[in-house]
Image (tube, rainbow, N blue to C red; front, side, top):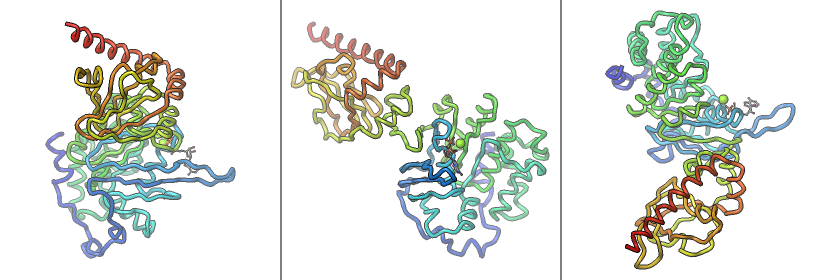
Length: 399
Ligand code: ADP
Ligand code: MG
């Protein structure tokens, strides 16, 4: 399976079946912008649905950048807006406000529905929870259809390439079967082969394992990992928290808003609404190299989450200080004092480079932790371990 994966990108020449059309400057190409590493750039995305009952805002101003080659999972409660967010990235639906740039292309500004649909066929692979294979076509015909639709690859080349794609997902033996005569896991693999047929740089999947047993789900994630290593950008919405550990980045959507990734990394066991509260009210501060963030023996009134860079925890300020620990992005500090209601027992300062921290007030943090026993427990364990570090440093000093 591994050897044939190369075929996804290099096996055939991805050329247009109609040269005259490919030479014509596409309206979509005219809006190139955004950072060169970015595959997906969402700016201030708002989506409001109107119905008889009135207006309902599903996405409330989403900013998100996903770089080329990332394998990203998106999680959130049912109804939090995950599918709607994916539909904004794929051009299946359009935002009420905001800008979507995919691979340097603004897909909504000055672009007609049919131009967008053509762009989608050529640049995106989409995988759905219920596969959406055409039931009266064989697997290989289903895969060929996306090349026919996008008018990519020569007509004569398409059957062979479709077969190659089925090989990539391990289904070559089933090429001439109808979807109904293979398992649901195999149907999803065929749907992925179809998504890969036009060699898109970006794969977008909405709960692709939601209808599969865990073994089939595993096979899908293995394949995504492999494709991601080969350079594809993959965005996958999932309900299954166990899958998020296999992606390179996890994004949480809560009630139409994104949770700051520093918050979800530092306090992963909190309820989503609490993560969102911290996201919205924490203050972001940058400290210069070696600048003191938390001095010794001061009343501590905040919890600090490191979002970028590193800090050094010192046993005291001044020359006699011992280095106790280095904390990095996703770590937190200030919790010992907050939980024990005291003054800072150590001094924390920025490392050799600037460090960015999120600062959240003590009283709000204590209220949130009280509502989340598993977070309280995890923090309790962290505090014990850090206090032990302090004690052994103190013992070492006396010797
Ligand atoms: P998720 O995928 O996270 O479960 P969705 O993005 O499907 O959530 O939906 C978010 C909310 O938007 C839901 O409350 C849903 O009912 C509503 N919604 C989605 N699509 C439409 C639509 N076309 N018209 C009206 N409301 C919609
Ligand atoms: Mg959904």
